[in-house]
Image (tube, rainbow, N blue to C red; front, side, top):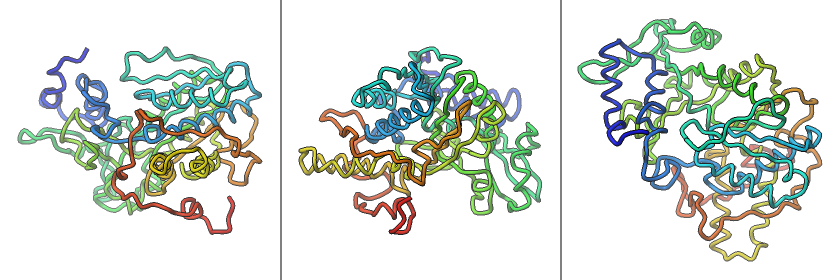
Length: 409
């Protein structure tokens, strides 16, 4: 168990390690800051980091409609797999379990054979109560904002040369120290783009995706991988316009790029390279079915129906608004809607899941059971305003999806 003093001297322990053994890679620093003794995800804390008094909020914490729509995609996967008697949904990085509770609750509302078949397992490396992970299952391995929290190696371009940014101590202060790369894979990831990158360019490489993909392959014998996170393709990430990289620190809903402040008290994340995700999963036998935005994904599954039916549920005007705003934020392009949704499959007939089907699959969401916040709901309350935005948001769906007004895709 983490002692009360362990996180207080986390920075000092990192300093002592560097002073004793020399500079460490940023991935090693990030591992300690997030997952070491007293790290961000292992230290005891009086409030959840996903809360108004915490550091950030997520799609599952915004409204139970997100989990309901994920349940609908899982039901679609189940159907594409031939409606097996047992359908395992294994969530990696489940955090406080909000998504798991919402998915299972909505599956119960849906009822029928899918609800009977669904077996949901949640796992989080920072939670002592996580269930043992199954192996060789048929179903889906899913995650929401998991890969962005993997430790990353940082690099910089200097005179056309790629250098890794280590963490060193100078004059008693943690600082960056450019050195030769620690792993050839770092250079391999960036090599196709380095001629286009200006001097001073900074970026990140996540080498943990290989181990993650092997882990997923060990769990899933047949089925789907559903990955929701922020990021882009390698070409989108490693380009001139992103010269500062994507590493971000979150502390009490304040965003910064300084990883050396509030060590153990602030979250550290980096954008996900979905090209690398495709590559690593393909190495262990998965096919990439496609990638889309969270806005488009949730629209195809029925979020428009959830919104349209709110006035029909007998709710007060304030309760309608209390539910409408977080549902819209889930799809807002400059909010959570900018997240990417990637789907991969293994040993499945090549058919397009609903969430990726831009042509329309005949799926009709009009009969969906409604889902609303309860009076004493634990989801993140957004009624008072959106972090980083205002409360006035009434776009058309064409604007949300980046479509022409007459485009029904």
